[in-house]
Length: 191
Image 1 (tube, helix red, strand yellow):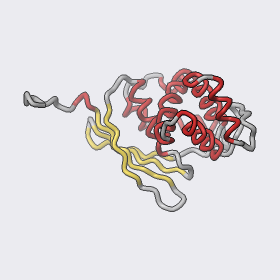
Image 2 (cartoon, rainbow, N blue to C red):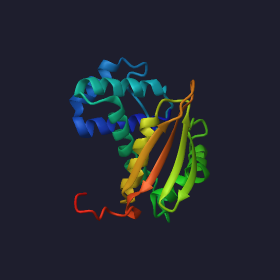
Image 3 (cartoon, rainbow, N blue to C red):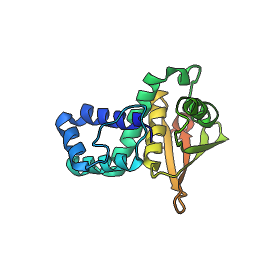
Image 4 (cartoon, helix red, strand yellow):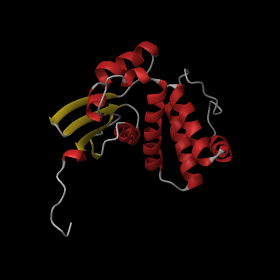
């Protein structure tokens, strides 16, 4: 896994929980790397899982919640670091459908050794989209966080439903996204 994911996780920890908590997490995780990461390095994804698990124990927040929150945070950092990926993109659905054909192509140019998840998108209607996520790594919660971060970036209210499709060593999920801007409001007074 690329080091930028690790460096951003450490930054998020420091920002949200303080340097003391971040130090305790790194020390308690007993990492092969010692917790020293560079953005361009490549590291074992299990170290990220160790860090998240240790943070979970220290602050009492469930691992899936932390991983989703990190995905949301990281999406915001991607917007700042890679503004070229957001030029002329106006919606969550437009951005997500361009991941494989545009963004991952560019990421592979920068990091040829990157092992990226795969996304397949299908528009179900103007307000609904299905996105299939597949990866050899257990980061479905992370993918969900990135999706939620994307919707937040575009200022859209999107309901995200997730159905697990994992089999064996492959981690997979079907995300059904519904734009809530087009869902009619309830007109019955008791709603």
